[in-house]
Image (cartoon, rainbow, N blue to C red; front, side, top):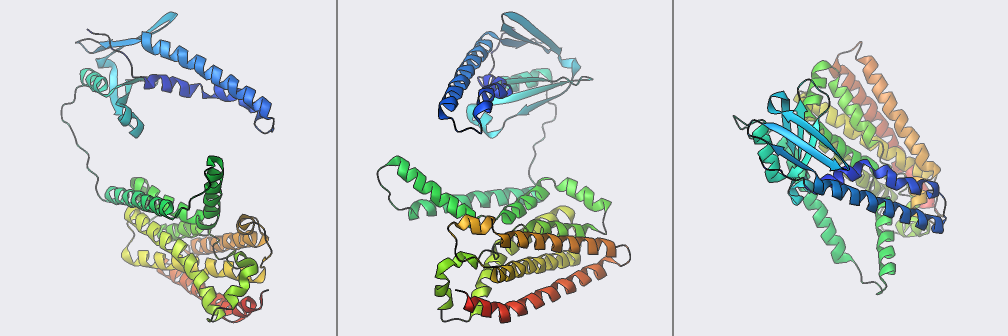
Length: 416
């Protein structure tokens, strides 16, 4: 019966539980711009971290575990005094081996032993070989089962792979288009940081990100969404549509698009195209960055809830009509309340009164759509409710589109 040691990650596991102790010296200077006090607090935190790390390393070096041929595990923690814990194989209800990505890179495994009838578990951080040895000795496997992704899981892995490839492509494009800066490293770093902040403020709409997250969650928790769909089969198309509309309403791409022209709006006015075509280009950008992610989100949710094809098509059409309505409302507000004399793009995008009005208008539209459909479901069948919503949205889109094509185009031509 040989004693074995723990993986060095056991120190990190202990340090994670004491993180508040390191942050405690920083609480007093968190909101005060006192650099001397901040430097002192950082030194105190570093010293405290070093002391606790040294103590943890000592515990790791002196502590051991062993398991005999009968499946009895003995864990000995030694730090001044000795703390032992004994656990027999017959007392176990389950044993799990967890290997996150960081653990795999370091060759570590997290072993969690669940004693039967007890809430207190035993967690050990061991090397991958020792973890497999302990699991086989405590609870031998009889029939090994290999899990292979199927259905929605395959789609989830495909989406993750496409996301990773697109991120690498954007990174390669950014590196290729980067210009050389002065040899001063600090100047170059701040210049890149300012470029990234400006790009994020303008081209990373929150609604698009949340639509992709919602679609990913629906694939990840497909069984939960399926059970929810079975509980309310009649209202699931309406609920799915309203959820997608509520998330897509967080995008305000067309609202600041007119104000972002700034003092160079005359360049847009001097183009040899009608003003209506310029407005259509702004609408197309919103539809591209919101309508397409909304459609992808609905496809992912359809894979989870399994709506009938007819209802899925109606839900997709209703969501896209709402996205168009949101774009037209934002563009109309941007034409009515333009701000061409700004000093910061972020102020126009996130802190203008026009953006707040657009947010309120989108919120009201989502609430009206949701409440109207849920109340009509009590007296009308689902196809009639969705048809009424489509007619309402199409009518609103048509009225706003007519206003943008006539008065909106004239207002754009008259801006100065």
